[in-house]
Length: 194
Length: 194
DNA sequence: TTTGCTTTTGAACAGATGTTCATTAAATTG
DNA sequence: CAATTTAATGAACATCTGTTCAAAAGCAAA
Image (cartoon, rainbow over all chains, first blue to last red; front, side, top):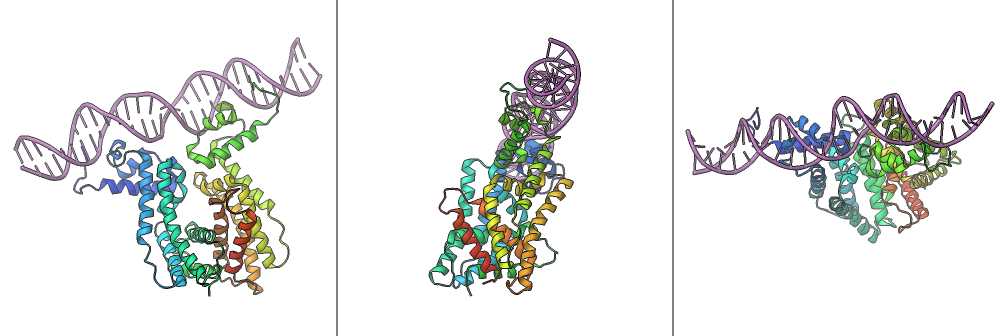
């Protein structure tokens, strides 16, 4: 039999991706077997291979889709460097806080990719970093920011902002608005603007 | 036979730990089998169990030793809050840059610990974070720092500093001295001091 | 050299691993 | 309805997994 509960068409693919996402984030890619993913979806192992050529591609697709969504969702830069930096900080925190599983995987499972897949993911990540670096260089060139080394400051800011995901929980002591405000305060001061 | 090359006494334990450290950091805990560790040491699998009761304890010991070394190596706080913060930043970057494998494992393999081991590691980590938070609270109370939420600033600074490990390489564009100077500049400004 | 202790071996255990594929069932199309 | 395409099954594959343990080997002291 193909499916016993029937009625919905072609929904297995997304369900596999969702199960893999959660399981990889919780237990780690190497600790999750194809059989466990299949069980979570309610299907036998063999069925997974109608949707992915192999396990690593399942991981790679999750990462690539996440990073492409990140690049696609980032708002078009508007205003001066200061305004664009504020926009970037708020966007980064909110986008990442909304997708803890994807973020976790995209940062922690890089070593489970083959060289070719790894290079693709790194290229996407660099495109994202370059957007922040461009803001910093623009601000530095007009004197709005005091940033000696834009590459270092870029990586420092991104590490700081992404770090929110390690502790932020919905319904915790602070709202996301408060978190965004606090981090923007730190970033604004760190780049020596205003 | 116990060992064919003989001559050195009781050195297998450290060699197992070193092999496990490198392999866990490179491939991830779940992706490294006891047999691979044994092969790296030049010994059969069974011999490993003279030095660790199980695989997870091997991981746990590496993490605990790393965090205890971190706590033991941190310099005694001297001077005012500003001086102590500068001391902390320099120490953190240098200590972590010296031990990339340990740092990587201690951050990435937490989910492979059982609840009891996890709690112990988290307790050690919190003790380290508390040291930074104390510096920030002291500085805030004397008006040296403008820090509204010391917990958030603590986590933000640690994330930013630890992020150095993701890109810093010996012999790269920047020396560690330069990195320390740049990060201290950012941290100093971010806390609103001087 | 003989005794005793420590360490390593090598094999075994019971089960899990990613992946393939012929068969079967369901869904879609005519 | 029948014909065709799509999708899931269930078993099999060869290999790897953490861990155990009796037997063998190495070492130190007497």
